[in-house]
Image (tube, rainbow, N blue to C red; front, side):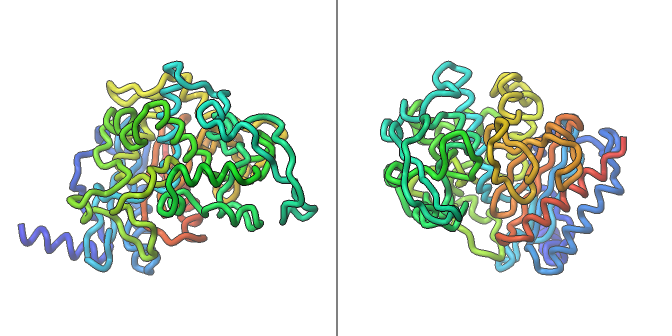
Length: 413
């Protein structure tokens, strides 16, 4: 046993692949049995080790599944460089905005139960949003020179697709944006849900509802709607509706003390999930393991079910992962998802070319701001999850492009 522990410590220091400590999230298959080249998949390890050796990240985990089978599931480096803890496949990561699709799946279950409609006005649940004002911008769109009445009310669909007119502080540099908290995680650690909602209803919307895609607190507000309908905290609702049915054993809004040693700590400090936030934010505060999220993404890829657990009907998933931006919508999607469309909480690829990566029309995805990334490709029946605690900035964008290339180039059938 001592020799095994020592070997793991050495493997972590050298960036070698660490063995899995958890049960596999999906049934295993040899890569070649599902049309993937083992030799080409090995390029992922070469890349990950080089990044670790260069000091870009302490470690990483990647999972690749095709046709419902787990073909590649590896951990590299360390989960905590200071403590010398080897990275393992059951390491727990902060998901940041990868929380958003889970909140949406819970809301869509309420839609399927007839308890929530896609075009319900937000004011049905929170009346203060009934008479919102909208910013009238100066010629440079830098300052608000006046306000005008909203042409229509914010709907549940607007919250899910970021067309509500709400914003994040990090979505712009204007004085209006500076009055918002920068992110979901930032807000959840400084404001209560009531304080956040009151703040948003006193500010003008950045745009008329339905006209502009701008990244926002929409999914946090959707989480509050789920709480109101379910009459329980969002974490309890997600545990009941998503995490427990899918066997996502480590998904939560807080890492309990007994699991703290499995939490991935990066080079850059981020808001810690070891203590509770003031509210459970549906836009960015959850944690999970790569295996947990692989099960969630596989459920979406398989039309709303995983094994015997069905969370959504197939048509609902098709609706969620279809482009929801009408012609004429001004999109501010940037980076990895420039030239993509957007569904309900996920970006949706609408062209074979033009986009910055190889892939298929119909692929859907949404990353997390602390270095987590996933996508599902229905045409190739493929899901990939990459988690590496990565400093905020261009390195994350480079990793998304690189991991996409490394996984797709391994498809050989």
